[in-house]
Length: 222
Image (cartoon, rainbow, N blue to C red; front, top):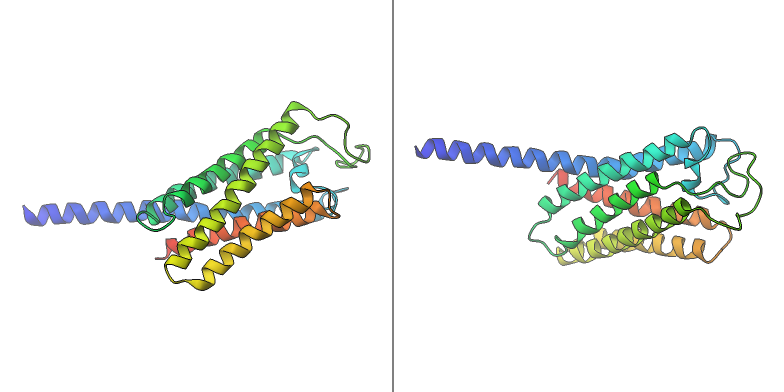
């Protein structure tokens, strides 16, 4: 009887561990996948200029479905990764808030894929130069989703900095601060109308997303 109970407990623990690793694997893939697919389009699609156009603009045009799908898949993977982080970080400093914020960023990515921003400033090819005087409702929804996503990513990075700092991992704590600050500055510069703001935003967003993914990958191997 004792042997049977012990065997059952071991099997359950093994199953739980496998599930957690699978969820964390989703989170580990989310950031790199979104970055690679976005940047590949940025350098290959006619008329796109990363110093003028945000990566979200890639959701427009005949190939817009690629970036829309990219947002949706990355969002779902991020949400799954957040569930994995909830399991992996349970009982640690920041263990409650990091998964919540990562989950919110995943939902924000999904919303950014559902609600597409308007064509603008010459992209796709044939679109008049400059920004439109008026925005559609779905463009407003896209910007709102982006704002929520960026805030959640920034906050997640800063909470992870405290998490790693409390664990004595100074290197990861510094990396988390750098990632969160890169997005904070990049987004702030873009929102202020700074030169090449879409580029600084892309660098910041990708940096923060990659750090969250790296954290998921890190805990997957623990």
